[in-house]
Length: 403
Image (tube, rainbow, N blue to C red; front, side, top):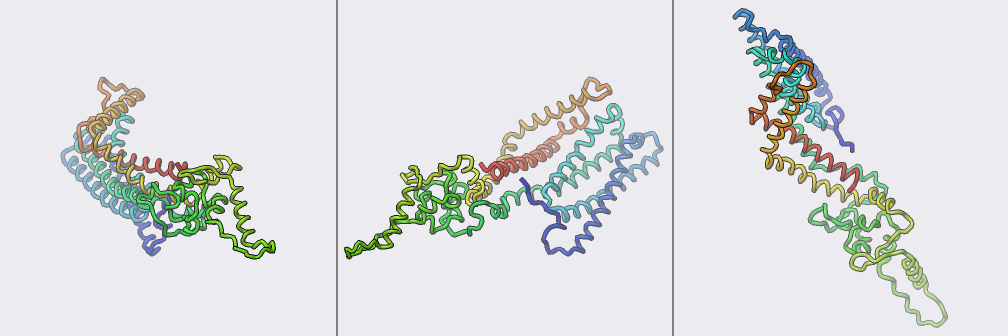
């Protein structure tokens, strides 16, 4: 299923193009500056120069630590400016929040795990010392700066997805009933459980004599309806049979009204029907298969309106269930997180070429398992991603499979 995601440049807003151009240029400059400063810190960390700080004179040690602090300060400033511009430019892009969250997670935990894996025995030496610790702390600060707007964008898009449901343009592409206007009809208390005659596309003039309405059933359940089956319209629009004109003449003249009534009666009598709910005769169409009837429902404006209401009803429910289950099973999830990290450490220990020693637990795993806030942040990020996946599954089932 395709979702509508647009950048600010492609949306219809009251923002001058000049402002958009300026923000875009600031974003590009900030991004280049941030990458350059971040690359400088990573170069010092991975080259081992920061780890060798203890071998240089005290004056140089102070100078290097002050340099790291200055670079970190400028990096934070450029990163904040870049993120502000990114939010302005891309806040309507659905994947923007997810990308920021994944990047924040990588900087917070994935980068150190990658160093442990790629540099193996050297990782412990590279990450030791005050200069390396200061650099790692700055990287974690950057992950928080990136993750905060990412989470806000993610929650905003999640809210809009739930609140808006599906866009209305899909109903204009339906095969059956796409030109039918909405009417004010008696609505069901809960739209997700409404019958076809409780939806806004049901026409009052047809509803009063519609067999589906009198049977108090649903057209998609019976596989026939006023949008797709001509026989339903014939029965619905016929109403009560007209009274024949009372002729007192015995001339053998047959009034035209009698001929019309007789023709309508013969036509309705020829319609194939079956006994439905409440004993009402429901028209049937023996000339098409069940698969063809289901396809008619999938392309009917009434059924798709029903699907839209179902989505709007279930979307907040299934979305809220995820964090509720996480809260109820938080301790169990912590145990599962620890097991998963240890399994990852064991896998890395088996595939790397250098000796792993007796303890294959990485430093980042030790840090995570020893901190409840870090575990909570990781579980929170995973929860947000699962909420998105659950919502996509609901969209797929509702609008693609149409079940």
